[in-house]
Length: 283
Length: 56
Image 1 (cartoon, one colour):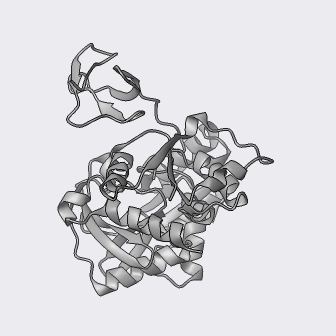
Image 2 (cartoon, rainbow over the protein chains, first blue to last red; image 1 turned 135 degrees about the horizontal axis):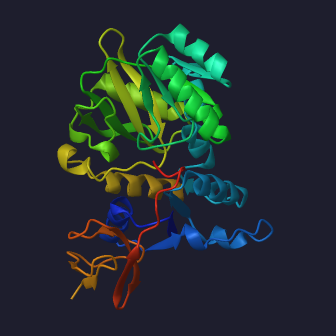
């Protein structure tokens, strides 16, 4: 069996995956995406791999290389479709709504004027996010009209074209935490609370993890969210609304898990490797 | 010995396990994020800076 991991840098997650393959005595080739050249007329060499695991830190690189590998007929974890669907927050939201998965209210607007009207319709506070982005980068909570006008003007004047796509999300009064659940195929393998005094709970922004029991409700919700975006290995972010219960916030396609192994006691890299081996063995 | 020098502050960095090429490490002295760019001998360089589409 021939397996490759494509990555931009070897973060703790990639090292944990390498070690998990090592424990199974399965060699894995590490491919640095910075050196890749894709010739669309000569992709045959990629067919030597039974599965390629995409672990790029750059979403753009992930999208293009998975598209190329898909064209070459190479099996990948995750697939091009999953990255495409999770990489754009509006597409994720659209798919969740389409599949009837409980999620936050979202509005999309293309101009400052229509975005301001959408914010006023949604009410304060609300959340403005870039459609493409991660780690809580450029995610802002808008508490009043003054803040809305200021943020929208800044994005209009200073931002690139993607900053002129205004993705607005209702603000959920979560209890000082959110839930990050890890799904492999048809099962939620582990979940953590991400606790923070700040309303942004990303661990990249200082959120602290603790174990979250995977209840039947959480498992069913997260698997439904994962299936809505195409399945595979994903991390589902869940908000606890005091009235409506669990709501999907986002789905992440190249998840980080370094801070979630110890509190859950779950071998997350091992589960990812087992899933990849299952994909490799599929006809 | 799995040791290397921080290119930013010259501190000696000790690896607890065998490093991997392109592995990210943080200098315990100056906090710089570094990339393993060579294994024999172990050499470090400043890691690439975060770009707009980086993430999960």
